[in-house]
Image 1 (tube, rainbow, N blue to C red):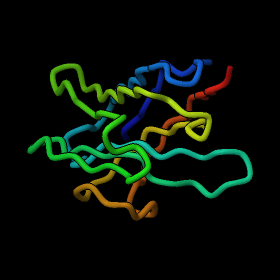
Image 2 (cartoon, rainbow, N blue to C red):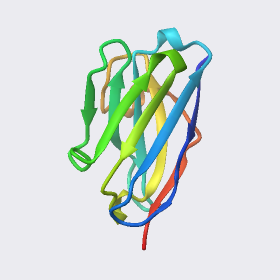
Image 3 (cartoon, rainbow, N blue to C red):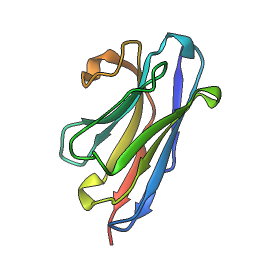
Length: 123
């Protein structure tokens, strides 16, 4: 079974940067895509970004394009989310997710979720 552990969340001022990390352990070879979803208080959970493990192709939500960058280190089984120019509306719990399919915005296809890490953007 696959396990995902996130780290790197915290409090940052608007315009600042944070990097989230997600380290996978267990049966990683079945999983084709690793991504990030987020959920803000009172809002529905939404997809943020995803990367295909073999090809490295990436997808981003329109709200984060140009500000967030997803990358991977297959040797370390780790995926990173570099977040720049952070806005208060980026405040949310960020979840690392894994799917046996290729990247998709369909949450039901992500059968492994991390515990989440809080990102708060505030002055």
